[in-house]
Image 1 (cartoon, rainbow, N blue to C red):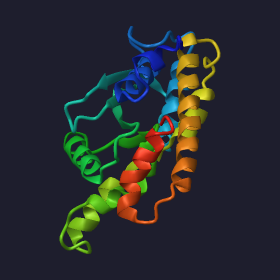
Image 2: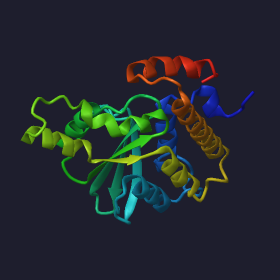
Image 3: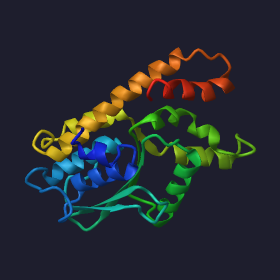
Image 4: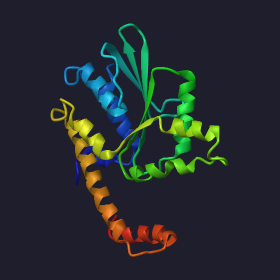
Length: 228
């Protein structure tokens, strides 16, 4: 039986991943010790996630899970030495579908309160990565060439997408990655998920169903019969 605490609690629970990231980033008492992960390394982690260059003179980082503005999984607040603030809004997905409407609503809600110094990140750690490319098609606007449609598409694409493989690389690059048993458990679970996804994608390509409608139903049953 696995003693990996992430496997025991459940990898598919998005809260476990937002909680792990909050633990790594938060510089208050709830976070990992700064001796193991200095604040500048935490800022670098956020830069790799967001794809942005952040200020170097950050004095503190605090994290709030299940944030009320847009119900984001994790909102990271960085406070600069001059007291200015920056925010990174992070949404996690494992196996649930990526829905453009949800991301757009989240962006609109948070941007109204914090119109400046804010970045948005979508972390996909499972099958959700394969629904991401089709998420834009779920924007139900009658005139897709309208100004409103273009505005909403722009908001949707403001989320920097981070897939499982890229996320694994980011976590593995942490200087404390080999020193913490907790991080080791997380890394092991991420790798197991990557291997599982690779196998499932291969199985789906082998599914002997031609009809697109039948493929969705019968491939699911076909994979279950094989232990997926």
